[in-house]
Image (cartoon, rainbow, N blue to C red; front, side, top):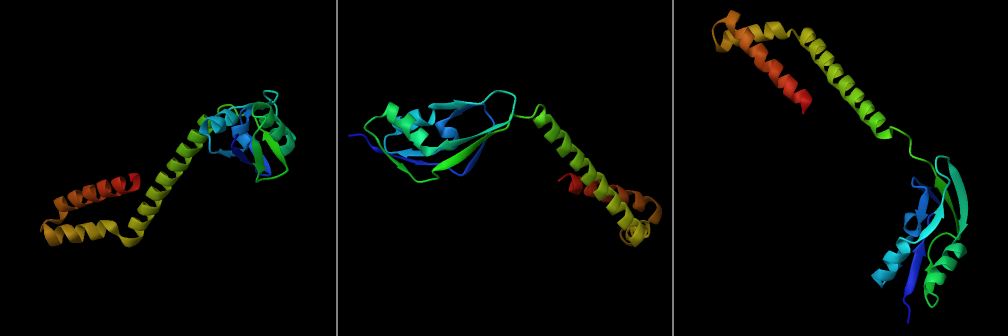
Length: 162
């Protein structure tokens, strides 16, 4: 006795590989994992390479393919009766573009944050504050300001990098 094979397909599926298997667009469940794995890897259609395309697929065509492999199987469709496979070829250098864009965003955020901090420090009078703190804790305003400013700058840099 062949087990029951459950299949489910959404209304529209975006594919990036031109050779399409059943597992690329169907959710297949079967109690026999060998059957399930074989069906997931079963070749269904090959799009022409390099150009966008769409096809409308009937679930009956999928059932016909499954029944050629397993003629005694019982198939239950839990999804759409007809669905669309949409193929879009991968864009060349897509990963490099994404990394470059991410790097650019990081630079803008880093330098924008630095500018905002410098503007804030100017508005609140950070130099006067450092002079006051070094006089308060070290008793010497001239040499203490340098140490306070250096530790403040290191803390800001580490905070922005994290």
